[in-house]
Image (tube, rainbow, N blue to C red; front, top):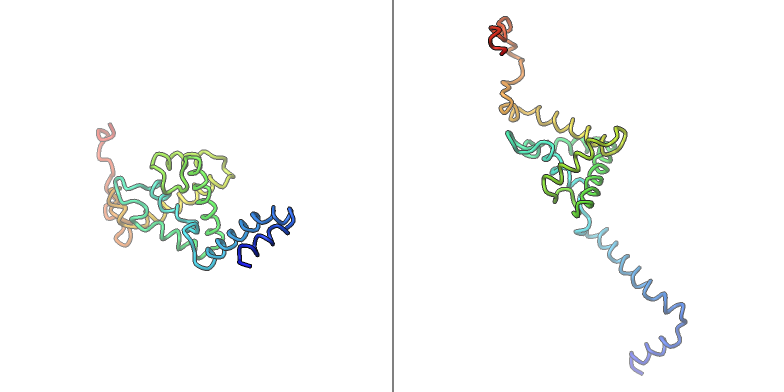
Length: 186
């Protein structure tokens, strides 16, 4: 008896219930193999949950008159803060997942792959949301942190016509008036 005859005899003797369950177990086996491959080897489906953060920060602080947020290392400063606080890291991940979820409404799988105008629309949604929602708190907190890290670097000052902090030299011209006459006001 060959292999085909052996298989066909077993197939004839199988109950209908077991026959109907065969595709289910086949699909489950494939899912388990794929899940195991992701856990052991990693996969393209497994991506960094914070991968949308750089494009989000560059949308907040674009490369316009000065360097963008990522060019001045703001993303790395925020990620360093996330490494010291699990709560902040979870918060950033939740915010980036929200960004990617909103990107799905724009027919994209990731916030970072959207056009600048689509990213701005999503950020405007976050900005105009209720004050106690994740998206609003994410927007306000990350914007504050981004600007703090951005303007703490002297590379950003030259575009503001800001000479730098007053210390250690102080304000040597403190006794001179800022406006010398009323004509300069008009």
